[in-house]
Amino acid sequence: MNFSGYIPDLHTVFLVILILFTLGTSVMTFITLSNAIRLRNVMLTWKAGRLKGYPLFASLFLVFSFSLFVLSVYQQRSDHIFVFACYGWAGINWFVSSFLMSKRYLTDHGIVKNINDPSQTVAWHRVVDFVENRNDDKLHYIFFYTQENGLNGEKKAIRLELDVPEGQEATFKKILDYKLGRRFNQNYIPASGFEQLN
Image (tube, rainbow, N blue to C red; front, side):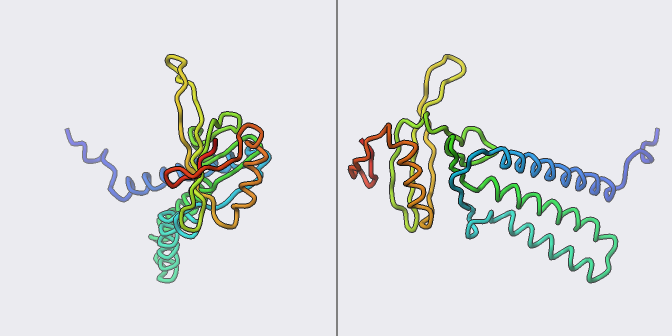
C-alpha cells in the first residue's frame, strides 16, 4: 500500500508549526499581560533585563525577525513575507512577555519578582528577615520567608534575591521601612560583607 499521498510536504509542516508557535507566543503574552493588569496597588516598579533593563534574547530576536521582514518586503518576496511576519509577531510577543516578567514590582501586598511565577512572589507578612549588600551600582537584597510544605505541613525557609537600581534606592527603602519597619529593628550590623538586621 502506498502512503506517499498522505504525507504533507515539508513546507506545509513548517507553516503549521510556525502558526502554532505564533499562536503559543500570543497566548503567553495574553497571560502575562493579564497577570500584570491584575496587580493591585503597585507602589514601585523597575526594569531588570540584561540589555539596559530590557530582555536580551527577546530583543535580539525581535530586531532580527523585523529586519528579515523588512528585507522580504523590500525584495518583494511574497512567499517569505508571511513567514517573517509570523516571526515578527512571535518576536513582539516574546519581547512583551519577557519585558513584563523581568520587571520587579513592589505592591501593597508584597514583592513580585516574576508575575508568571508564584514562587517568586512573597507577601510582606511572610518575610521573616532580610539582608542588604551594595553590589556595584545597585543594592542587592536577600529576603527570607517561610512556606508550608504541602506534604507534611512543615515550614521551610525560602530566599528571594532582588537587585534595586540606584535611582530607586530611596523609594525602595521607604517602602521597606513602611512595610517591615514595625516588625524589624532597623539597627544594621555589618556581617560577612552584608548588612544584617537584628
